[in-house]
Image (cartoon, rainbow, N blue to C red):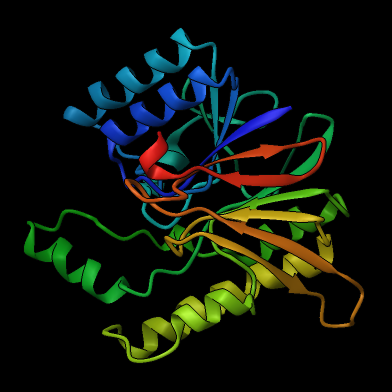
Amino acid sequence: MKVGLLGDIHGNARWARHAIEVFGARGIATVVQVGDLGVAHGGTEIEKWDRANKLLRVHGMTMLVAPGNHEDYDHIDALEPRADGWIPFRDRILLAPRGHRSELGGRSVVWLGGAGSVDRHARRQRGEWQGRRKLWWEQEAISDADIERAVAGGHAEIMVTHEAPAPVPSIERALGGRTPFKAHDREYAAHVRAALTRAVDAIRPAVLVHGHHHRIVRDGWRHPDGGGATRVFGLAAEYSHGGLGVLDTATLEVEHLAFDTM
């Protein structure tokens, strides 16, 4: 089974529609979106996501989402989960609650979205400047209860997350050096990443697919006790090389798609 992979899109409807067309041309029926979809509601957001949902329906496609740290979690929390656990943002756009279990091409999958925002302070301030419009939600953080739900089912072959575990060498190199973000927000984000890492260590997936870092990642994360490694594949963000990819569930290999050939 070939599964489409879609990196962070931050509510960019034009890129979402482009991705759907690319995957539709390849005959792909299931798309995994790794967070920062840009879940929002009200005003023009309703029409935007209705159009994306209609295009998914035209292609006979479903988008499965591991929500990130740029989502309206108040809206997500108000949605009623289906009997199978998926949360319908639209009938063709389904959000995975943290710890949700499913299958893709006969492979077991666990979903654990969420991440800590290193720009938390700035987003709070922008919200105040914009008439107290909310731009940051505390529900983005991965809680102990989230971890317990995720690990309760034991091992899974595939893990879909927004954040990546630590350390992943290529990510650590990219994160090194000076940063404009406040120390307490960096510490907060690192704490949330450490929580995800505990879950990965317990679940020990063969493959983990993530977003958040806005770059192609083809790397690995080694379990602290030396008991093997998890292959880590990261997706870039919208309008970027590697912002789209394809997972082959038979081989558990990921192909990152080049932007200039889309």
